[in-house]
Length: 173
Image: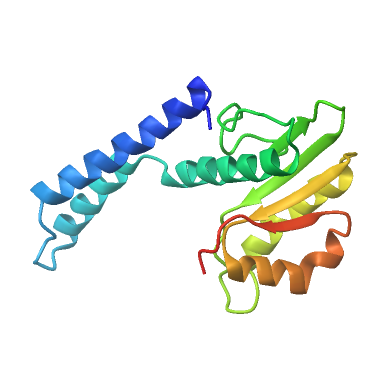
């Protein structure tokens, strides 16, 4: 697959974060003392190196959705890094070469409960459901990255998004 310049730059940034994290961990052993300041500083360094790893994960999930859509709609090609992660609006809003609109929302959420989403998760999902339901599109998708999330959405929330296909992008358990 050929990546856009923005997609390649995002992969390079993720690679850089992981390389820096590996170097930090190899040079700084896990603290052995139970000193909150030592632990806080250690974790703060790790978080600083990682940057916003949630955005990295969201980008990678968007790329997985792109791969799925490119397989399903041969003529479709879009830049997974074009829209900033966390920006308002639909996660995916594309048009095929034959003029069909494809929209999608992507969740990398791990359910809070064993058999349901947590309250804040449920609210977030319903906001995405409302965006999908309100939009006029030929194809509507709700992409998830965890098997349990997929099962919960299919079992508990599918009736809230009747015209939307729920797709499991990768089985993370």
